[in-house]
Length: 441
Image (cartoon, rainbow, N blue to C red; front, side):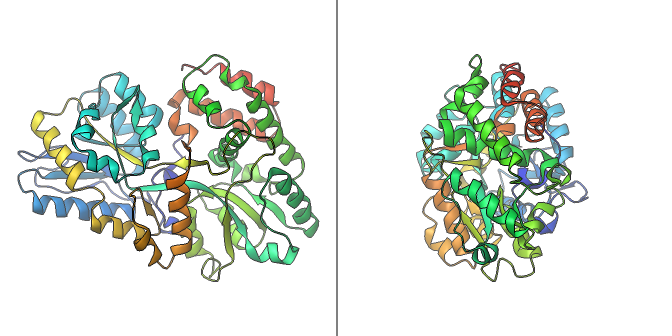
């Protein structure tokens, strides 16, 4: 999986706080990094604010209340963690609690017997599962069994627009793909880029295909790909979706030079809030960054958001969404019985507590907990947070980001081929053929 995904992969709502900046590895707990106190467990997590402080406070509170089941917590930078956790799991030296993103990587761990099957534990603790978004569990499930606890926040992909530019143009945000193509001409005629895109990062372009596959063919299209069905990438819906994307590129829908713009620098966000682009498809986590960096753009009500446009004749429910359903924590199969017991106690009593939920909302994020409408309604970001909450909670399908859902090998091939598709150096048919070759890898 691509290593440049740190800002979105940790889903830090306040992107301006430069998540995963050069922070040193830090640890807490009397036993030191990687060693559990007697009766306790170890946990590795990601550095970067605000999530680091939120996680630290939750662990501290749990340890105070459970002195015989303490969690020894160690933080790592994102890229360093990805390397270290794979090595540790392979060597049978993983921490008790393994932080992850679910999907394809979790699937490899589960099929290798490296993480604990938590299905029975969830059956014994139905209240834990009932309070979380049902959509969060798909990426935690492998072959019908649950191998991770969904936690933290949800981050769907949002269709943003600049209200001020739309008002100047005298137009409304798009409800259909035809509307979007029409708006492309409108804004180009105004001398404004219709769509911002940090295409050099590649996963930003992937978000467009994720929605288009769904809108044209429904979630079943990618499900067949995920299941490894032969020639799944050659589904007619895939060809149609890719063709429409290239039509948008040909119509100068994306800002000139999009392939040289990076998302890591937040340059794509700046294009929207400075009025150089009218629309942008991006993660919910960018809201906080635009609020911080956008010179009152968000606070003055100039940022708008709508559901991704429907495709006429398409099979996908317009309420479907894509993105990151949650973050995930698993238990190492190599952990001792006492470590597993402590980890499960922490999962039940230490995650998404009242204080943790409050902290996530204050940071501009939506925790994956049902029944928090009243809390969201009191936030200064209530309109956006309530939208994200309802979009995620009520979506008939919340499809996990493809480069998390697929294996690392297939994900890298996907990003490379998407880049070529957007540059029109390959046809939709060539894209499909290239990706069919990755099925099962």
